[in-house]
Image (cartoon, rainbow, N blue to C red; front, side, top):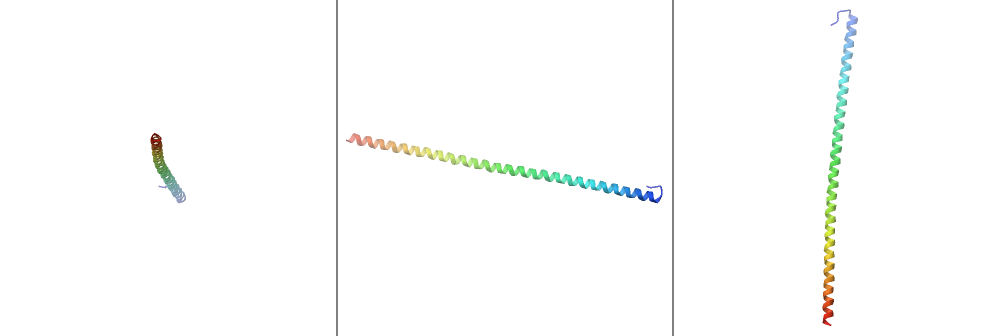
Length: 101
C-alpha cells in the first residue's frame, strides 16, 4: 500500500496496472507462439504422413508392376514352349513324311 501523498499513490497504481498489462500481453504472446509451434508440428506430422501414404502407393505400384512383369515373363515362357512344340511337331511330321517315301 501507498503511504505517501495521493499523486504518488496514483502513479504507483498506474505503474502496477501497466506492469500487469505488460505481463498479460507477454503471456498472451507466449501462448500464441506456443500455439503456432504446435500447429507447425501438426502440419509437419501431416506432411510426413502424406509422404508415407504416397510412398505406400508407390510401393504398391511397384509391386503391381513386378506382378505384371512376372506375368509377361511367364507368357513368354509359354509362347516359347508352344513354339518349341510346333517345331517338334513339324520335325516329326517331316521325318515321318521322309521315312514314308
